Length: 266
View 1 (spheres, rainbow, N blue to C red):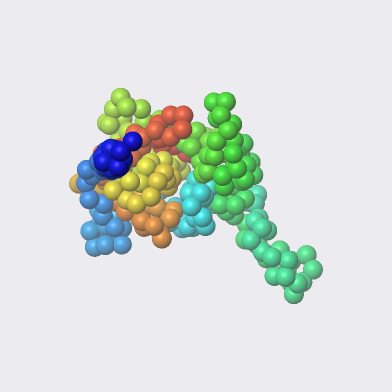
View 2 (cartoon, rainbow, N blue to C red; view 1 turned 90 degrees about the horizontal axis):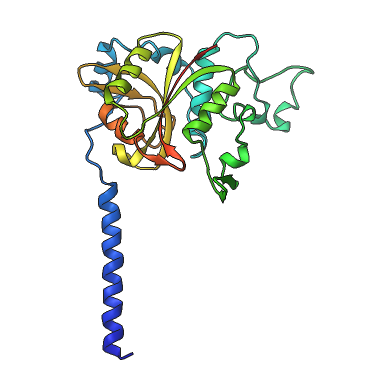
């Protein structure tokens, strides 16, 4: 092959690679409505006027941030479980957060832990192990793959393992937007049950990949929901237009689309 031919081939290959990269960028650039930070004047005004915010105080009172990028699911589960079971006498104690040397100077038999669900102790009752949540390969559809974090159905199984009643909704491509909005509003107006959403960050205008968090309120005037993001270091709590959130949920994850879970006590 002549030098000229080799140069021409290299240019053609480089052009093809660049074109493919640009095509991928264009495919993921989804136009979305602006997100509004909760801690802004407008964000606080939306909460003040909202008539669907019954869940917000309980969730805010039990809120904790995820400790690593794979734990948005168990962190959300812990927040919701603490809201549902608040005041129960059988709350678990997480001793994994204390080191042996932390206990050396305590009186005998004294338990320093606080009874509550944590993003660490909720995992044990589910079918997916901690190691698998953190990336240990698992078999899905006959293939050995890494599946860190939680898919929607895996999180639903974890919540049910903790004896919660759930309704899982996969946001298929033809799922009517009106039904999704109605589920959100009815739930957020009613005490004792909660909404957990599973969406793709970059589709809603945020940086990052798949994510899970609870909803705290709905504002009719702007048709937006308050996403109480369990990774505040990444995005913070935001008001997100319902149509934008639906786009983020209507994305494929391993075996099916993402979606949401409605949760209540048994």
